[in-house]
Length: 270
Image (cartoon, rainbow, N blue to C red):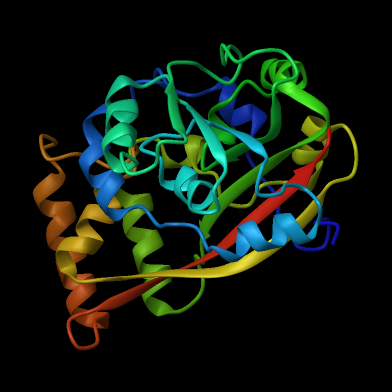
């Protein structure tokens, strides 16, 4: 399906240009919460990409901005060799620990514009929850260099359903109240025009339902995994977590609360 109908408006290249801090280091103090509380990706993605002819079991995959390896795992479980390209040392170390059971995982110190991978060596480039941090033009040039002929790029985002119900609306309001630079770095609502400018052609898209179920500590960890939220050393931390606790108490059922996502997948050749 062409994503014009379903893609909503927003940020991307403008946000990249105005990012308020070094994007490589902004997650360095969030690694533990990121590994433990960020959402995984539906395994149906791999089946969809195989059915669409985008990849097979032998495809060599470069996961760019791979962080602690959350998105790498679904391809490793499929038997693919995966190169996790990540500039943040703490994230790379977490990925090595997180994926130690997979001998076909290789961690690489690189960026979207300088992956260090060989020319025409990769069947599929993946960027999950990361592309909005890239310089799109430089990344396109680098991805063209490392992709084999007919190779594709797959961009993936877990996008929280901001208006799913009262909890999601109030949770979003809490984030907007306390976030440092949420408006400039949020990745929800990727615009079709921005994606087409990157791919420079029409692209295919597919959405999958996804969710996480949290107790209060889990919901707090999920919130703190976001780089735009005040961390434990912030003077606003106590007030913020008190409001989160009240929000959880208002909406929890049997000590749990569900956070709902759409996992959106976009892919094309360049």
